[in-house]
Amino acid sequence: MVDQLSRAVISDPEQSMHADVYKEAPGLLGLETAPIRFRKRTLHETKIRTKSGLTENMLSNKLRFDSRIISRTSALPFIQKGVYQHQRGQKRGKAYDLSDFYIGANLTFRSADHNLPESVKQNPVFTLRVISIDEAAMDFLKASSMEFKQECSKQVVDDSKVFEKIQGTLRQTLSKRGVRVITGLGKYFRQLDKNRNGFLSQADFKEALKVFHLEVSEGDFESLWLILDDSKSDKVDYGDFTRAVFGEMNEYRKAFVRKAYMKLDFNKTGSVPMVDIRKCYCAKKHPLVLAGKATEEEIQSSFLETLGESCSNPNEVSYSEFEDYYEGLSFGIVDDDDFVNILRNPWGI
Image (cartoon, rainbow, N blue to C red):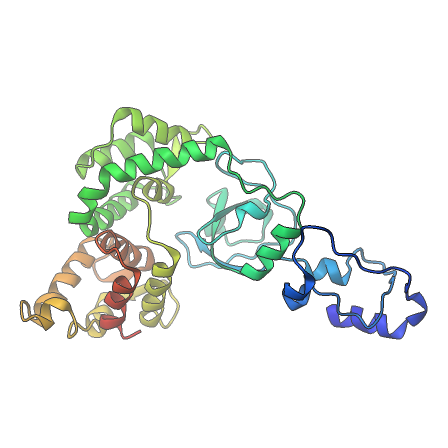
């Protein structure tokens, strides 16, 4: 499209507007410092009339980002072009703006608005997680946007404080037994979810916390529930609940978890036979093996036992179950590089 517009500029010199000189607005980034696609690149100034309202500037004035779907299905949705609003949280009903796009951000959409598989449409709202973003484009758009506001609303700040308080309370518990708690809870929730829609009741979550000996005060739980149950349906997605209560590893770590799983799931089925996990897992460079405190067989057996206990089907491992294992392991590892090495060594990535 940009190429076609440029050709129009070259082929229609009579529309040249030499009197119009581009003036840079005060306070904006200099065009020479902006990404090349934002710069004025036509051979001469022009005024092109087209049936479409699109111009080269409008087409290039976009923000590119990568995302992944947060779902229990392997289906890949297609988001149709349009203007969208938040479907959950304090901004529900408000249109997305630049402040909503950052690495780790969740973007929510109505399933009914898109041509999606029925397995996805079972949940009225699906979520995309932003995993990378065009920072140069973002900086330029922020600088040139009169509507961008960086400050967060008081309600968003208050919600974050509720999450941080609960996560801080449970941090010590998780640093000691994070793997078994996270994997165990994941399996527990999946067994309770008879409708396979990802939603459970307030009573279910309270019972789960009691079963796994996770102490959250009644007041903190009520505050948490008011935030998560924004539709007032007494049902909350247990993925949202888990992330709110425990937090989650950053997208850098998650990228390596996905890379390891994709190496195992070469057929892209979303499920890996346990026998393949056994064949591929290598414990030669495990710290305890290198220190002579354990054998490769002992480390492998311990890993497979813990992972197997978390799986609904002991003969295969889904991505969510694989990620739960490393989510729990992540709590006890402060440095990102140390965590990545734990993935690189056994899986050869």
